[in-house]
Image (cartoon, rainbow, N blue to C red; front, side, top):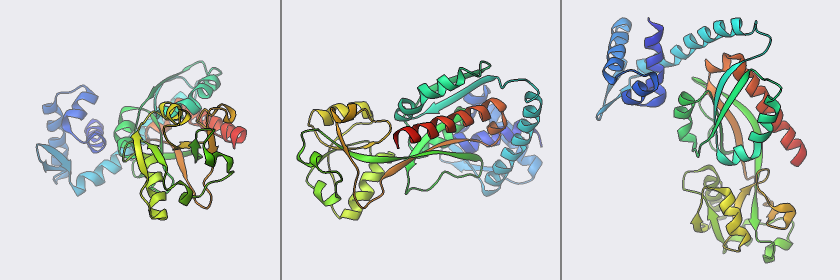
Length: 304
């Protein structure tokens, strides 16, 4: 089997459409379809089937896509063996990171990479849900993502998942709010409050909804804002309360916002790196993973 055709199959598994694969690999859609057809002939069974106007992988296609990642990882290990003969890791690494994660980690990561002059990190902040991660992992070398700690972990069939930190979610209130005098808050005390949340399906909203299920009362969400810095301004202005991540919220030492933990419940998001197994073999990528872990550990130690 041709390695390039295996790569095409892997890309289809991750990107979901022939058009997206063609754009990513700089081929025409007809050329991609032809590569998939030839690969199916080599295997001797259908690897794709019609799905509306597009294609989806058959069971055989999904199985082969999983094995393709192993083949591509082996090739990447061979390249990495040569690359490790250099004195320092080098090359460009493209990283997608969710905005509040960038606020929390990116400056420190870049400062640590000043000691690795041959590594060129190109970071992009991307608003993402867990369902977006497979496509992002196809587009970027490294994806720093987050999820509700009670939600399923990303699949490790074709990806590596590297835990970075657990970030508790606190209730943020205006400093003059009556409940700000409390050291901790119970869910039943918050039942009548106006909440500022994020879009449905995003991790922090998942946490809020799961907490409300346990409490038996749906939260009254008055605004849905994905930019936490905007949410901070609204809470500070008395427009509602919110669940905000502990390490990346600017409360100005309690002068701008009052942050209080929830009593008797676990509310947190997990920050993780997701990347293709083959990509993880690159020395420059491994160096970035080490730096991300070091920065996350230092952050938790300083603010935990």
